[in-house]
Length: 206
Image (tube, rainbow, N blue to C red; front, side, top):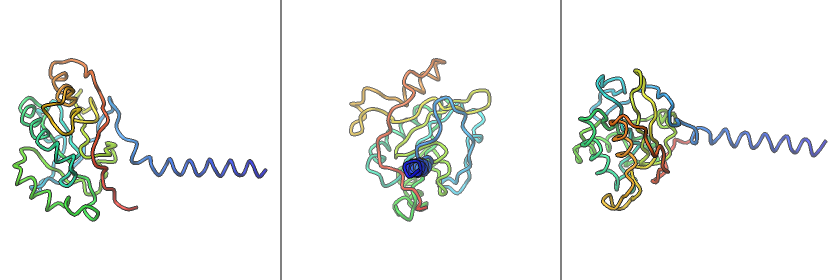
């Protein structure tokens, strides 16, 4: 009886542990349909996926002001928008860090960053962190390419921008770029995921 009780307690503890991490590990998988969302842009306006009726899809970047890796990839995110926005795949950047833990990622700091760097794409504040959790974003940067399919948006790629954090010119695998080019050509995405490398998102204390 004691052994049975011990095993039952162990199973319960494991279940609780899994439930506590589920919100961070679960999220969209390739092929999943994306729920639309509404987030505040740095200009104070609300932005959603439905806003651009002519969009073929989006390049969604979970990023931030303060992470060194996010900063290293900032110019590449800007370049992706410059390359693909006119082709129907604009960038939506989303900042989800808890500002209490990371003051450099406050909404005001986001506004300053977007202005200083002259972002040509929305920089959205996921203050509740609900969108980041729904997507399953864990890092900054963490990229999601979504394509429009029958009036809905579906996940086509998840992960890193490329395979060289330090030097964009040295990257020989440009995952996001290759994914969007494949979609624009009507082809299947060859590499649908790659591990996102960067700072962990600063989650709110429970």
